[in-house]
Length: 235
Image 1: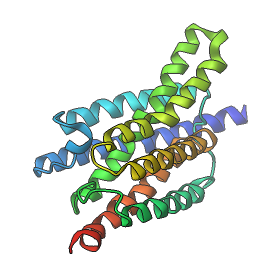
Image 2: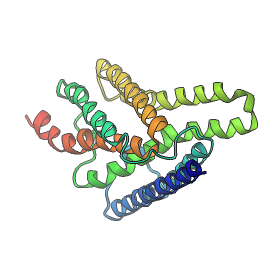
Image 3: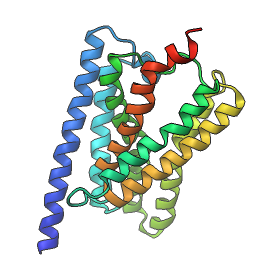
């Protein structure tokens, strides 16, 4: 009984934090759009940023609820477990990709510019986690309800899709913009990034993997993104 009450409490606590992140993501899209920023064009194309962000966070939150109810991911670990690991690995994984950038692997305009980046990347990090990780897991979890005998194969397929979706899309997109060697590295790098993210998601819950991605974006896209143009392309 105590374990059940504790789990419900953790679910409510994490749910409130995730809802807050959802509202913040929509608010960021609304504000940046109102200010005339074009930051979202790189990920959403011509789709209206506020409408698209709102749709993704609604579906993503529902996906989180489904996977928690199916116990495919934890509602959230107690205390501060996993937070330090998420931040540390997120920071560490930026080092090799910055080396690739320094060696000429990426074009100058790959990052949103400051100060838009301060709002854009935390918002996009949430959209990415919902789209690449939560959606495949939730779709598989819903299918399992109708086809219980295929639970383990479907869960395995969902994990493979969740691990490979972002790397594949990035490599396809990058063929036009990066040297072949850099594009191959990007695919491998993002596969590692997503495998680690799924470990954090399955071991500690959604907030840890979101913090992991935000930590990575904070260094790679925001901090490094601020200095890289002047450092690498000013000559």
